[in-house]
Every structure is written in structure tokens, then in C-alpha cells.
Image 1 (cartoon, rainbow, N blue to C red):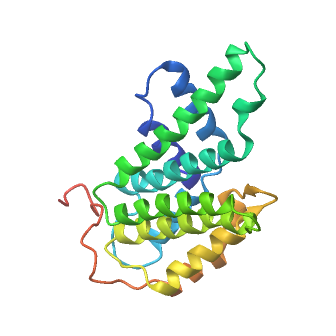
Image 2: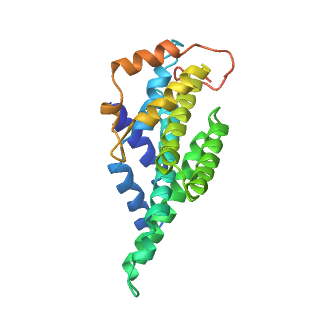
Amino acid sequence: MDDAVRVRDAAQEAVEDVEPDRLREVLFERLSDAPMTPAVLALLSARAPETGVDTDADGLAERAAGVQLIYEGLRLTRTLAHEEPWTRIADGDATGDIAADLDVLAADVFVSRGFYLLARTDAAGRAVDVVRAFGRDQTLRRGEGADVDSLDRNLESDVFALAVVAGTTAVGATPSPALLEYAAELGRDCDADGELQPADAAFSEATAERLASLSAVGSGSDDRVPSSATDS
């Protein structure tokens, strides 16, 4: 199965029990249209170190989906904060009010479900750091003379580093500082005209080779996904 399809399915499965129906539809619509780039990077990172762990295990796809969901929630929050759609809704426009409210709820659900998927992994702490950094950056963005483009792009940089942590620790490896910096650079460079590039455009064979060269199997993580159905 194609990586993007695999992680999209896992992300949609994570929110398929959300109610009401209209909110679930909004979540599915956004996931259907979104590039799965952060989640695919998590899979690529898991394959980079030679650990013998089965990278087709469902647990890895769930971790990758957790990264993607957190990104989707924060990205939507960023869009809402910048565009403030509720300020452009005409008086008495109930449909517009509902749509804006659903987007706010969708952002919250994405982040909370992403946290849930990463809660018992070595990536959990970094996920919290990503959300905190995002809040700080968006506060700084409102300051006079702020470099808004750089502050906004920090989200992609931080999420790509989170993806590498989620992927490498899933196979028992520990990401090196050089690997994390490379992931952050990928995130900064992955924005094309204000839109995140899809995985097949953002990553090449050279990307996978670079991830492998910067990866080293470490002893710092026991948080592996099972390498087979018989592993515990």
C-alpha cells in the first residue's frame, strides 16, 4: 500500500467515532485533501536505521497518523487565527457561524486525537513541546516587526522533527541531533507558495539515503512497535 494512503487511512480511523456526524465529515474532508507529508516522513524515518523491526506494523502507521493529526490541528488553528473567518460573517448568517465553529472544533479534535495516538510513545514529550512552541510563535507573530513567515514556518520545522522522533523510536533507535536538524530543515524547505508539498514531491531517494546516513541504532529507546505478530 502507498505510504500516503496507509497513513491517511490510519488518521481517518482515529477520528471515525467523532460525533456529531457533520463534525466527522469536516475531519474526513480535511484529511482527504491534506498532504500526508509529516506522516510519510515518520515512516521513512522508521525505515532508515537497520533494526529488523517490521515497518509495516499497524502500530507504526498509528504513530505516523498521530504526527499528522497534530499537524493538521495546529495548521488549521494557524489559518483560523490569521484569517479570523468569524469577523467576515454577515449578521444572521447561521451557516457561516456553524462552519467557523466546526473548524475550531476540528482543530481541537485533531490535536487531541494526535496526542492520544502518541501518548505512550517516546514522541509524547516532543509532541507537547511542539504545541507549546506553536503557541509561543503565534504570540510573537503579533508583535511589531515580527518575522511572520519565519515564525509560521517553525510549525513545519518542529512537526518534521517530531515525525523523525516518532519513526525512529518506533524501531528502537534514537535520533541524533544531526538527524533532527536535517528534519527541521526539510520542514522549513517543504513549504511551496504557502502550501505544504505532498510527500512524493517533498521526498526523493536522496532524502531516504540522507535519513539513513544520519540514523544510528541507539539503546535509548525501548519503545518499539512489535516486529512480528508474536512480539510482545
